[in-house]
Length: 84
Ligand SMILES: [Zn+2]
Image (cartoon, rainbow, N blue to C red; front, side, top):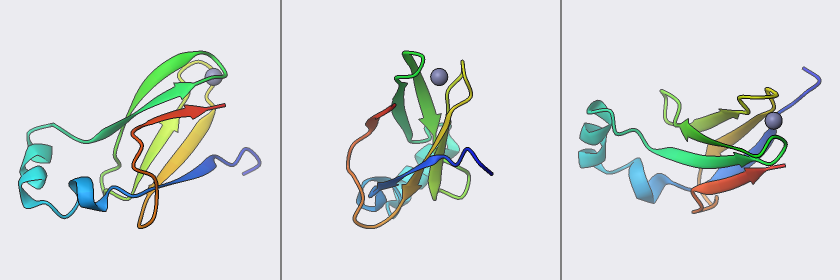
């Protein structure tokens, strides 16, 4: 794949992974999400966590540019990102 998505690292374990009651919230449709601004097209996109809880895959709705936010230790606490 030539157009590799940019990789980001997030640390959201303490926020929403190991907390049982949040698992229940997830079942109710309250999945965690990020707000991503695609600067390429000036579009905000809400990006929901993947089914396995390990990443967020963002894609610009206008030009298709993609970015991957990995969930892991030592990452960012931010929930809003700008993809340039
Ligand atoms: Zn775009």
